Length: 395
Image: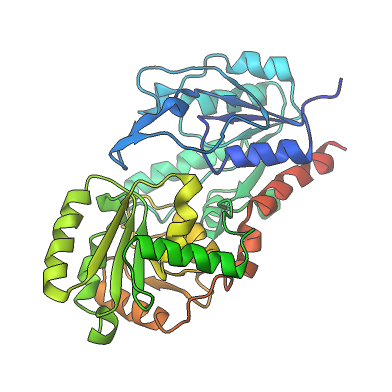
């Protein structure tokens, strides 16, 4: 019997990775097996960011082979040793794969897989989100962090980078260009199969349900309502917009979190001050998000320097045809900055944001303007990058 092409060690099932494993197995059946540290999160878990119990409504364990070690110590994902290396060696010995793929180096689970793979002489690949801009760090911490990554990267054979800042991180920490392959961050395109008229219909229905008029200009936010994401700036933005734009502006918050009550207070204040309407959708699960992006005109992701390594909501908004403005600390900005209807503003600079929104408001609302660029940031592109290395390395 031929060896397994790829054994994946993943902390837990999540959207954005499970779709990769499903697609690889569809293209190359029985070539992949995923070993999870735990699958307990699928039963629903308290998400501190959304401030509620979250259970995704898309299948994350279907369409590929997997096993779960349930190698949990205490509360999962709470620290380095919360996911242990228990069972990792036995899994590697049992499957004897041609290569091993890691999705991070954050837990004892991941580093045990790396250690055991090297002992067994099995090539190791890595696809994760590391970059050097998302967090503010003192110089001493940055120095020791760099030593840490250089040490582990020497033991890895191939790196799939999710975007330009991720690639720059690898090069900065001793990885050679020839070891790098693009497997960009993506989101499943939930409007790809809709016609122009269907998208228009979905947009009109979503706006009508929210009480939004045809000529209103909808400025949206999607994600967790937490300080890191800085959603409050959308209200402050209104003070700096010209009357002609502010008079037709509607703020649209898709998500939940600890700042929700504070944002609703702002909504009442700005309704009294300017008559601006604000829509709060609450948490929206994956199967229903597309209609909300279609309802928006412009999405703002104003995250602070507190860990926004990419910003997948931007991919989703671009797929729906929204124009987008992001802070200069949002990771995907480096990749999308050349797009016609994409703007980057200085972190927490309301006047700068207002200027960018004023520019973006002049574009007509269309649905497919960003689609050519997104071909390289698609599930298909990511999967083919990984699968194409199978025959190349092991022919």
